[in-house]
Image 1 (cartoon, helix red, strand yellow):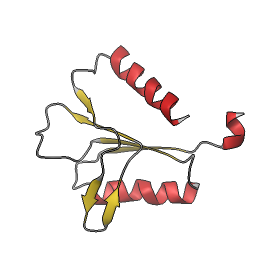
Image 2 (image 1 turned 120 degrees about the vertical axis):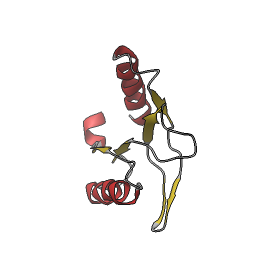
Image 3 (image 1 turned 45 degrees about the vertical axis):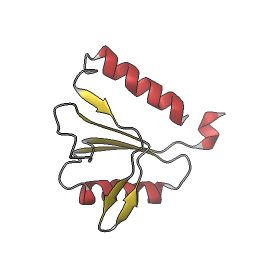
Image 4 (image 1 turned 90 degrees about the horizontal axis):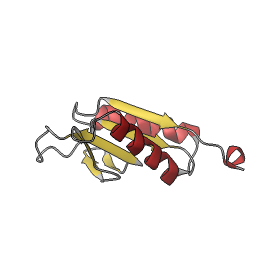
Length: 99
C-alpha cells in the first residue's frame, strides 16, 4: 500500500506539471533536539537551498502503527520542522480495507 501511494503521489506531481519545482526527498531522516524522525515520503521545493534539509511537505501513513501514533508523528513534524514543514498529510490505512 505504501509503494502504491508513493506512485500515485508522483503521478499527480507529474500531471500537475510540478516535477521541476518539487524535489522528492523520500524518507530522509531529520534530526531535531527532541529526536530523529523519518517520514514515509517528503518533498521540498527545488528552489530551497541544499543546506536546508527539512521538507515542506511530509506524508505519514499509519499502516504499521496506530492512529494515535500517527497524530504524535504529525505533531512532531509541525513542531520540530524549523518552520520549514508547512504541510503534513496523515493517512490511516486499515489492513482489513486492503483485502
